Image (cartoon, rainbow, N blue to C red; front, side, top):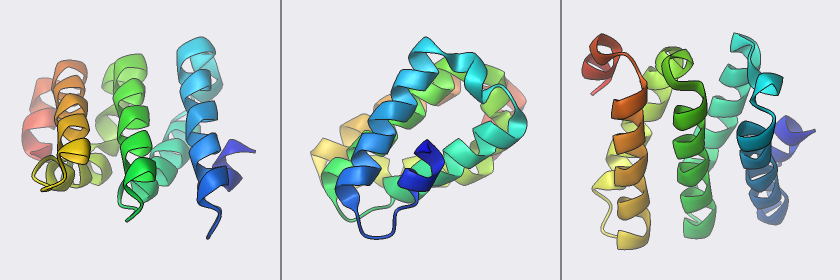
Length: 122
């Protein structure tokens, strides 16, 4: 189960693989996450990993969030309160490896969600 692996407490390799698997689902079988509950579980798990101190895991999570915004567009409106603050923090990170990816994710967020919801989130 991808959701269980996203939350694997100390197994960063399993978490990274779960992010890759989730990105595959988002790109190739997006209907699997069509329900609000599934999308919420996915975004919760990914946001938790975006805050990881392991930079490769955090970047993988930001890439996954980017893909979620592009695939689910306005369906991601309900997740903005959880996602936007993390992306904004990472965008001003001194680590360019993370800040560039966070900026890319924020651009995808702004292009994908409803304008009113996007403005209130930022």
